[in-house]
Image (cartoon, rainbow, N blue to C red; front, side, top):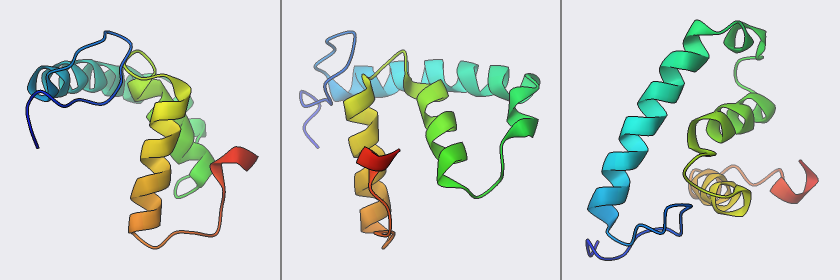
Length: 89
């Protein structure tokens, strides 16, 4: 991937390397906060609802809702999960 191509993001970062660094920094911090909170224990393992909650929690500061929904859509379509539609969530 060209380092000048990056996903649309809330900071308007256009360099994919810089965006990846910021994404890693923020998502790792948020992951720690999520695991330290009581909320993570209330999520049902292996469900799309839990996946969407975690993904939103980790990446909401970086991407708007449509971008991260599309990311989940594409990754699940790629792995063969086609029995749901994010529009219904």
